[in-house]
Structures are given as C-alpha cells and as structure tokens.
Image 1 (cartoon, rainbow, N blue to C red):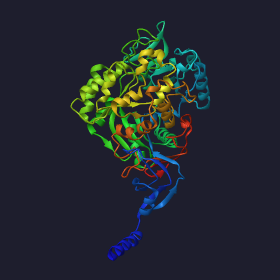
Image 2 (cartoon, rainbow, N blue to C red):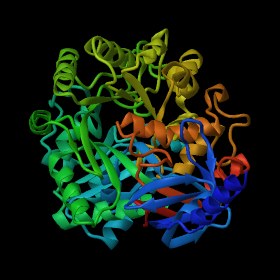
Image 3 (cartoon, rainbow, N blue to C red):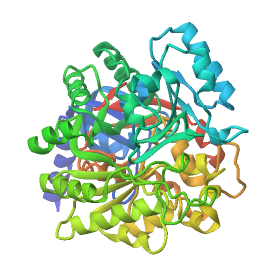
Amino acid sequence: MKFTKILFLFLVITSCGVDKTDVDTIITNANVYTVDANFSNAEAFAIKDGKFVAVGKAADIKNKYKAKALIDVAGQTILPGFIDAHCHFYGLGLNQLQVNLRDTKSYDDVISKVVEFQKKKPSKFIIGRGWDQNDWEVKTYPTKAELDKLFPNIPVALTRIDGHAMICNQAALDLAKITESTIAEGGEILKENGKLTGVLIDNPMELVEAVFPEPTKQQQIDALLEAQKICTDLGLTTVSDAGLDKQVIELIDSLQQAGTLDMRIYAMISNREANLDYYLNKGKIKTDRLNVQSVKVYADGALGSRGAALKQDYSDQHDHFGALVIGVEAYKDLAKRIEKAGYQMNTHAIGDSANRFVLQTYAKTLESESNRRWRVEHAQVITDNDFEYFKNENIIPSIQPTHATSDMYWAEDRLGKDRIKGAYAYKTLLEKSGRVALGTDFPVERVSPFLTFYAAVSRQDTKQYPKGGFNKENGLTREETLKGMTIWAAYSNFEDTEKGSIEVGKYADFIILGDNIMTIDQKEIPNIKVKETYINGVAQ
C-alpha cells in the first residue's frame, strides 16, 4: 500500500515536469464548431507547420503544448474556412477592371453607367457585366440602338448577370463578324424584323468574347490578387473556380509557389480542346494550394435568359424550350473521354431537360465505377422522377442558395406552378444524395458566404421577403448549411481528408467570427463580420 502511494506521488511529480511540445500557435477560449463527423465543439486547438495538431479542451492543450503565439479569442466563434464550391474567382478579379452593371434598374441606368465608366477610364473596347432585365420595369431585352448612337466606333459588349446573354453594339458585332446570316448553334442571335438587335444568348457570345482585348499579365495578376482580398475578407479559404484555361491555371500556380497568392484553388479546366489535350493526357495536378482534376462543361444556358433547356415550353414564352449548348453525341463522347482520364466531370445544368440528359449520361458512363464524385452544377430544375439519380454515389449536386432568392421573383413565370416545385429543391437534393456542395457562382451572385448561408436557411431576401420563405420546405438547417460550405464542399473536390473541418492533421484553415452564426437571430446572419481569416495557420 505504501509502495502504491509512493509510485502515485512519483508519477504526479514527474508528469508535472514533462516538457511541453512546441507548436506555432495555440488558439484558446474559443467556441469552435469543428464540423467533424460528430459535429462536435471544442475550446482550443494547436497549430504547427500549417496544420492542426490538437483540438479539444483549453486546459488539456495548454498542459501539453507551448506556443510562440497564444491567442485568446474571448469566446468568439471559430469555423473551418469557408469553401465556395462553385464560383468564378479569376472572373471576379477581371470584373474589377470592367463596367459594373449590377443593381441597375433600367436600360437607361445601364447606359448611364457605361458612359460614366468611359469618361473615367477611357477604353478602346468597353466591357461590362451585371445587368438583369428581370429587375427592370420593362423586362424585355434591350436593343443596341442607343449604344450605336453613343459609341459608333468603339465596340461595346455588356454581359447579363448570369453570363448567358450579352448586348453588343454594331461595332462589336462587326468586329466579331456577326451578321443577319450568321448561324447560331447552341444559342440565339436575336433579331427584330430580320435586323440584329445586338442581343446574343449563350454560344454566339463566344464570337464576341474571342475579339476581346487580352488582359496583360500584370492585369491578370492584379485581378487574382484583388479577388483574393475580396474573398479572404469574407472568410473564404478555398474556391472552386468553374472554368479556367491553361495559361491562367499556370499563372495561379506560379503565384502560389512564389508565396504571392495564398488562396487554395480547385481549378476546373474549361471545356476547350487545347485544355483537354493538355490536362487529360498529363493527369491530375495537386499541390498544397492547387488542385486540377476536373472539367467544367455547359449543358444548357440560364433560366433568366430563357436559355435553360426544358422538357416542356416556357410558361411565359410558348413554343420556346431553351436549348442544349452541346451536341448530344459530343457530350456523351466527352464524358467517356473524361472518365477514361480519371478526371471529374462538372456539368452546368439548369433546365429539367438538361438535368435529365446529364444525369442519364453520368449514370451510364459511370455504371461500373465508384467514388467518382461527378458534379451537376446548379441542378436547378428537376422534374418527374429524376431526383432519384442523385442516390447514385458517383453523382453530387453542386448548388448555389442565393440563386433561389435572386430568381424567386420571376422563376415561376418561366416555369409555372407545377415545375417550380422541383426548382431550387435543395432539401430534396440533400435527402437523395446525402450531401450537397454549396457555393455562390460569384460574380453572378455576391461573394459573401453569409448571404449563401442566409439564403439556404431562410429562403428569403435580406428584407425577409417572402414571409415564411420561398418554397421553405426546401430550406436547409444551419448544420446542413455549414457542412455544405465546408466538409461537403471539400468532399466534392476530393479534399475532405485535408480540409473542411477542424481536425488533427488537416490544414489550419479557419475563420474567427464576430457573432455565432449557429445561434444568432436568422435575419442578422448577412451582417456577420469576419474578424480574421487564417490559411495554413497564417492570418490573411
């Protein structure tokens, strides 16, 4: 008995004298939502060499570790860094160099902004984006007449907010060699009385985009760095850029390797032959910050521009069905090529016809495969029994909650009261698939992840309209939403073992919030501020 007491005393004394393990940083006195398998909470964590080495109770971590930096966050909420599963990061940066037409209330408002921009930043080719005729009192497409008068010799190309329609003046059409006889495949060239209106929908836009002035390398670098600042200020630590070319991907890699660009980027290669020939033959590319193993493909256009491919005609434009922007056989062949290369296929599909075609092709192409995680980007309108396809473990819905609250004012006009029930059906998609990857599609929508979170949970705009929420049965819980913006988004990128939760061994990507997003009054979610964003354990 005496020996037992002496041994116990010896163990207590020696344990108190054990050297603590050195780490770089300890975060303590925190309200940590780890988003691990149990969705557990923690009080503290330790970081070394850019990774979490311990997560748990503050006392335990302080007793075991000593750090160069001990940070007491005074009870503030900490989350894993947000992951935007579908956005246009590089495009956001480039947009800072163009005319911003978001929130314009009329075509006259658009014209005024273009004129003002040209006075301040004279350009030999005026490029802008962000108008939406659905926000105007007159909701019809504009024509080029006014632009022709104001800018007879300077090309002007103004892209709709969703990137699926464009209004051009005659100078831009001439430069792109678009005439009344130009054939439009996978889209439309709108005319009135046989004359060009200047409006292009989907594929014909590429003819104009092909003659855009190329940004200089410095402009590209500035665009990427500006986009990074916008994103990290809002708590994003990883972005999935839905469509990049080889030259931009290589620029991103060089900036990351040089330590200039910290943002982690899941780069989907654009469906262009040069990109496919290079990357599908080269294989997957993976660094700590860059992941290239997927192809972004478009199946159809957008609902707002009536380019989404529907099974039945549009409720507000009879005998109009939208259109696929890729040939049926070409798409099937592309799917086989991507599958053979071991790449992920991520297809933009808005209309119910496009979704069925994509889902059927995925199921057929992957019928003998497992864990391929092919994504349906937007999965916006699903009808009949097509939700059942999402039970397939190879298929993931990648959705953007703010699309629902942006489109809700006019979506039923396009679809009618029956089809709208299967539109923006995020809860149903989650129930079928078991997970959803959440993003914004910025700059189509605003960058803020807090607007994503709010839209998913409330199904309302920031003025709490409509009362009770838009098709509220398809809203998500806060826990589901947070998972969709972290661990499930990471899963959709094949990165769930390295990020998406605050767990030992994962990258120390996390954010400190000014309010608790899981308990704050719902209507205050959009106003939450990010106190600090950390990537690899380093404050941005």
